[in-house]
Image 1 (cartoon, rainbow, N blue to C red):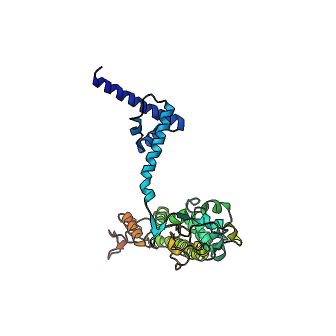
Image 2 (spheres, rainbow, N blue to C red):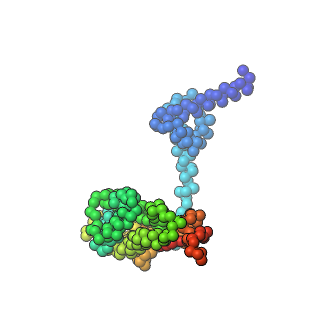
Image 3 (tube, one colour):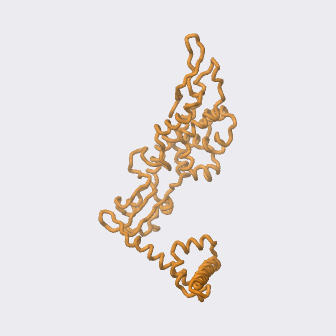
Length: 341
């Protein structure tokens, strides 16, 4: 056997050992082939397998490989361990992420269902319209005829707010999701899809047939955004911890950093955490009314309108029908918007 043949046999034996290590790793740890290979590649397990004895048992091979990978992982993490963060020059060793569960733990009624109950007492019209827009009786779920939905909007505001488990379990549980869908583009699309197709050449054609329904839906949108945001800020100012909450207070590092998704100030008022150490992601109750981020970022009006114009600029139904001196209609090639709210 020459030297070349020896090298080939060695490479073959080494490849078999690597396959044996991978298969043993899969079997012992219950991994898929891909996960085992990804783990071995991530921590360069091949470097270990290329220098370990060929006669090791599979169990010893896998055990040694895992120890090697853990050591490699520690080496890779070391630069991050040495990195230091500070606030005003003071080192920060811990980061707390605070969500609504923190306030709930202390007995605060701070869920979106609590907000709904607050709205029912202050402005039940907002609750009725919001649930009419997205609830079981909504335009998306229950109306085949657009005019029927408009009638429902007109008379629904005079009805009492529905008391059902659906609103509690689904709608207000995902309040932020539904609120983000309450936008102008959605309204434009809905009106466009559901209004009756009018005859563009009809001499009795009137854009008032468009403007009226849009104004009705615009009223719903305005009520469910601006008024809701105002009432939401007022509600935030009423939230308080239940009596006796101090018996269950937690230890919080006053020198740590805090990412706070809540609007309340309990970290400062009850735990004496410095404001400099807290980042209020959505704002806090001290801000002026209307400035809190309520679940989602509101799209810029001009951007939304420009996108709508671009989408519909080639549609004849959005161009005005003008008359010549003889009273004959002719088409205009310029887009005219009817309403934007």
